[in-house]
Figure 1 (tube, rainbow, N blue to C red):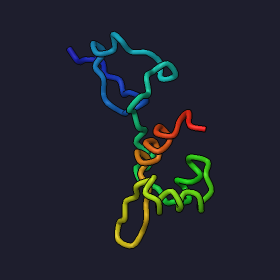
Figure 2: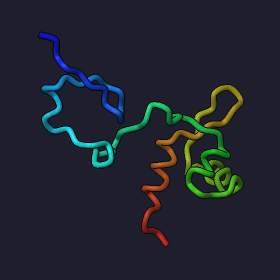
Figure 3: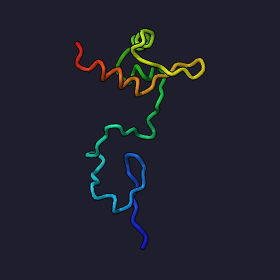
Figure 4: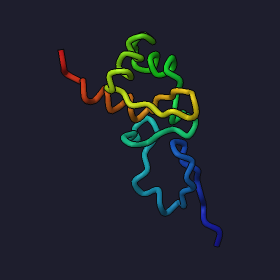
Amino acid sequence: MPSLTFRCPSCGHHLVAADLAGWHPVSEAPTTGVRPSNEPLLMTPDAAASAIGLSRSTLYRLIRTGQIQVVRPGREVRVSRRALERYVSEHEGIG
């Protein structure tokens, strides 16, 4: 007997019908720790500044002072989404 399978709209995993007992629509699905596959792990400083609502110069100051860690592939500078999330979570509620 062939089993009925579905593809998870959040992460793309294949689910067998028996696995769907606790399934709920994506709009209600927990998103903690879930990263869409089309979301980049690394971004340019301009994109990173835009992602957290800061100016480019402010982001570079935070990088220079070590408050935001960067990845340097060759001569380029990239900021990881995790570094931005860490910075924001460390500074929530300050001020």
